Every structure is written in C-alpha cells, then in structure tokens.
Image 1 (cartoon, rainbow, N blue to C red):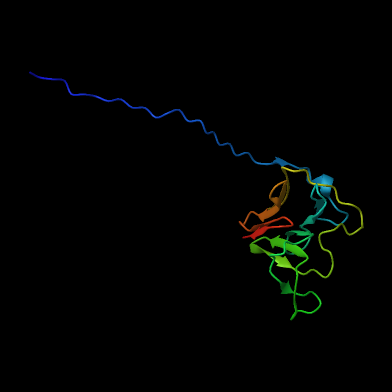
Image 2: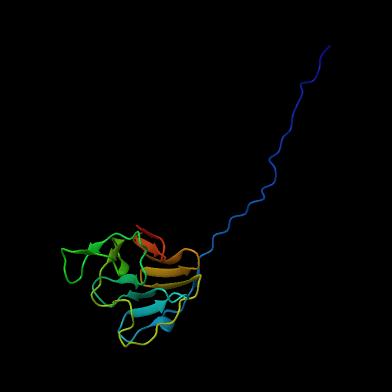
Length: 160
C-alpha cells in the first residue's frame, strides 16, 4: 500500500507594523535671516535655547546657547584658557565633531539685539551644508552634511 507524503503549508502572519520615516518639513531660511550676511537665528519654541547657523565666515557653524545639561563636560574658559568652566555653548563646524565651548561673546544671538523667531517643532532650517531641527522630546539637533553634529536639551546631550 502506498500513501501520499504528508504536506504542510505555512504562511507568515500578516505584518502589523509599518515604519515610515519622513524628513522634517523645510523652514524658509529667509524667515530666520539676521542682519549680517550668512547669519540665520532662531530660538526653540520653549525659548530655552538661542541658536544660529552662521555661514558668512571661513568655517560655517551651527550652534546654540542655553542651559547646558549638568553632565556636559567642562571646557577651557574663554577668558582663562587654563581654567575649565561649564560650557555656555555647543556647536558643529563642517567636518569637525560637535563640541561644547565657552564663548566669551554670545555667538548665537542676533547681533542687532532683536528677538530671533522660534523654529517650530519638526521643521528643518537648512543653510548650505548645515541643518537644525527642534524636537519637543529630544531638543535641538544640528548636523553637517559631513556627518557631524549634536543633539541638546537641558537634561541630555549627544555629540558626534
């Protein structure tokens, strides 16, 4: 007596997880333009951080001033280079990794003393090869096309 081989058919259950990644909507750089050529200023919607993308000099830079996390590393002081101090700024410049700094002058505020507009959550301000985005949970992120940048909130940070 011959019996047919038993066959089993299985199928994968339908996928219920969909992941979509969308780029932040672009912001109009002219809405953030400062009086100096190549300067673009913004605040976070919470107004905790004052930031800028500065492209008018030799080293285009994106950075922010504001309440730095307690875990931020000490940096050389602007007025006393041998004395480590709590940073008052964070920045990224092209091909250099993001880093904390002690800026003697507030670099990331409009030079004319005007109030910078808020960059809305989820909008990307891109000028040349620098882009900044504000996220309500993570804070402000600025990065260069060279693959360097920072993410900063008043309680956490990441530099790369």
